[in-house]
Image (tube, rainbow, N blue to C red):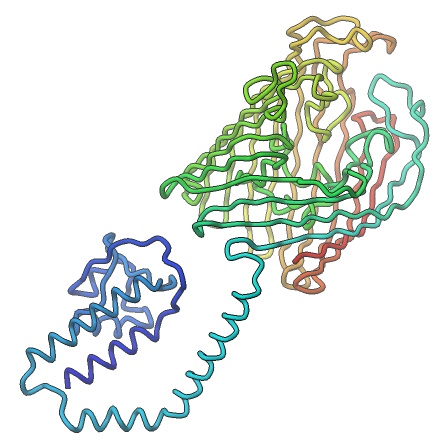
Length: 536
């Protein structure tokens, strides 16, 4: 009966795996003589007895060099061929050496009976395979590309800002900046991403974008604290918004080279926030993730992730918005830039911690200074006016999944700004090159995954956006006051992303800024939105 048993064993082994069309993570497999040699196979596993029979009785199942079987991963065609060949070699060996145990007429009759009894099922399977082959051929003949997939996202949003007077900085007169116009706007943003992979492990992304959202910033409310996470406008002109190429180097390093306009959270940096997506996460700009990740977004650069799947890992990045600009000697090494380093600590899927440092240099030659990337007060974004400024930034971010449907997360950070150019005499009366300013911020949030419906998300966030707590410079014409935020603003945000279908989500949300611009003389400002996101 060896022959019959071997045929049945081979058939059972093959039918228990899913075959894939490509070979990934190939490693030479070694024959084992006992199932105990496979470290990841336990007696409690549902297929333990089958594996034990195949390994110890028939000797035709191989393991990996590290002593594992990896029973939960898909079987590649190469591995299938290797396993099948081992079993067939064993069958030939049994036939050649067997005497009394060679297949008998009863064995052949049993095989014939099984074939007859399952003729209908075999015919059905054969028909399904033929149908799948026809469908696959049709798809291959009409596909856009063998290497590229198209993905997209479209946002329609109705937004409104409400309040009394526009906010003013700590040294200004309340109400001197005019009133907030209580109006509703209808805005949109469309993104189309071409994702290309040449090896199955790399990624080339080219993203096109068109949008028409004028930000709810200083010109509308007097403060950038009221900006939404998806605001900015290019008058619906279609442009190339993002280009990067990501590829692995060995088993523990991933490198990404950016040509243009890639946010740091898209580079593989863990940001420890379930609200990071601009189309599906928090409604506010500050509420998506820590401001430390925003420095010099929009430029070219390179990022390296070290051991990204491990319990301890690291990320490095260098970003240079002027990398493609040779004017005034700019380029990769000159002009505005940011250098990042982050240590990551993970405990499974439940806990994550990131410790981040960034060194930045901003120069007004490439535009107005935005030291905190439009997430804090006017003073925080331009500590010394519109002059060249360098900074050292320190941040800590963490996320804890308390329950499957409850995530606690938050961030805190400190930045020190240093004046590199001479202080702007139009706004500063005292202060020299080398003047310093200290800036602090924090936030804490709760995320409620699958709230009310699978795929939905509820969110609450409270914090303080970047605030200047000390400064070496003073302002002209405003009582010779130090350029320091005198009070404290509070950021309170709530939203609920409801999943209508797999491709359509509606997110009503409300943002309240108390004491905007860190000035208690300012009225509370509110921003509401109903964001509809279509993804495909």
